[in-house]
Length: 162
Image: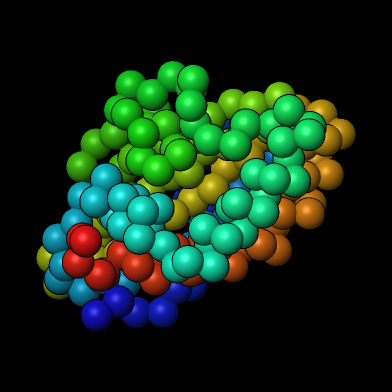
């Protein structure tokens, strides 16, 4: 059984993950003795998220299309393939980094799995670098939704794969 999702102080070096980043936040959930890789945790969050997140994503895609913003990771360099719409940039069993660069902003999500054998946790850190006024505006508007989405997605980590 997972514990509650908590917002925590990020410990990821934002400059290493995404040089010039201006935004970083992190959320953590305890998963007990559950053995998960970072890829498995990320896959469960992204592909098994609540349906309301899918609805928000569809709405976002409709709203940003006129601005020429990406609506998926298609065409992005993904050495580790895609998880949902997120291109995997780098990966170890304990850490997965995904994300892409767009006209308005660049972002990365970092999924870390750590802890003792009986008290493991998954941390998801979001790192963003805005590239222009559109990016700064977008980040300001999306931040409250981002926090809800991050919490909602993390609630799915413990569930078995479908």
